[in-house]
Image 1 (cartoon, helix red, strand yellow):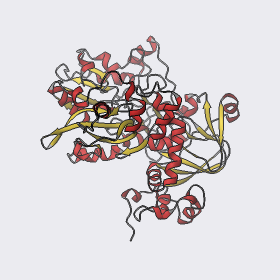
Image 2: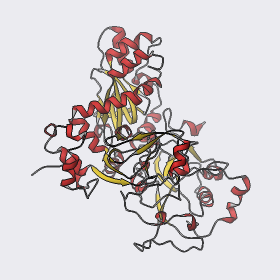
Image 3: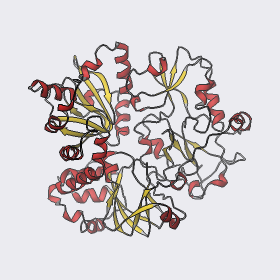
Image 4: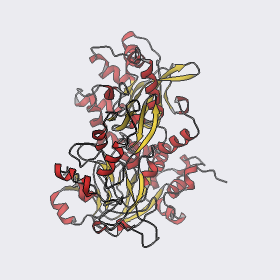
Length: 553
């Protein structure tokens, strides 16, 4: 009997047949992959049957949207697709919300114009698709209404049979860099990230092909943006890029494992995948491309958190540099572990010694030295923020419980701004006299955006807040189920008369996702902050530094 990973209990494409798998194996690149390289527990045939699905698109239907967070790649079986190069498609074409600030009188009129019945909608603006309930994983496509005009007004490139695209965003969990739509009827194979990871792991040719694409399209630009490599000439930068190794740690869907760990009362660095261990000798610089990692040192039988690293940060540079300068190999003074999913670039030591270290003028401090001298309370708050994954938040709702009188003015102000129903709950995780309320934190790593079938949940073009376009939300609850912090709620909606809207197929109430949008249309910003009479509430970022620094200023 063949053992198989637990994820295959829920195949990506439940209708994928053995006959279809045999047909796929005859096509490139799979026909060039040796199935004998795969272990018995994860055979190539099993990956294709359980980690892929076949999708069909009609002309004008969007396959991926620029800015979406990808978790799958696509291989074209039949048909032609177009990738939009410049300019990007307008937000309304992508099913997104165009945010316009209300004027003063429009904002003021909310005090008396809101319905007494919450979650009222003008249902006439919805299409039939948006008034139907869809199960998780449902395939719902956004359609471009005027493809010829798009082709006239935008620079595009054609993708034809055999083209693979979307793999870089899927493996690195970074935003899609361009929108792709079907120009003709098209049949595509969608491969979720788990299958891509396994194929890349066990087939050297596939791995080299994927890595070559990344080096060509994205790696040099990424290196150029860093202070270490930004001033290198083209030849040196190419040498660095050629030497970089790609590594991933942790679970892509870290929100699921995080919830399980917290429910079981477990946590800490000892339960996290180790990227680098204290006392080991480093063989390269570790650059965080996506995700978060914890920096910690041994303390008794446990670990003490010094800080955390996010996208754009790097680890091990002081130790590597001092080893080069002193002519002896030094060990790491701290450990690095993955907080969920982390995509890492490893730059070999010999590359640094040739192209970077000779240009360093000021010796860098170690992670331990940088953390030394901080107040114990800061260490404790850092530990708390890392354990609760609040470091993901860029606009968390932080309440000083010593100042808060529980008057609920913030809740009422939120309800007045959002049609009679507040989009946050005034309770949450607490540390000392601080509380992070259950309100969307507009995360740096927004896992809620992964898998939305219509792109209804997205980052705004201005401000970068995570918002939901109510017009294109189909109520599938993918975002609500993915949010690690339970900050997205599904609500039953009503028409202008207050009558509940019912799905004619299932006879169930129509649901929509709702969450804090930072009062994106209000000229004064978040109503909750402005309404607090005691200055007990602020929206803060947990990115680096002292956790409550921005509040205490």
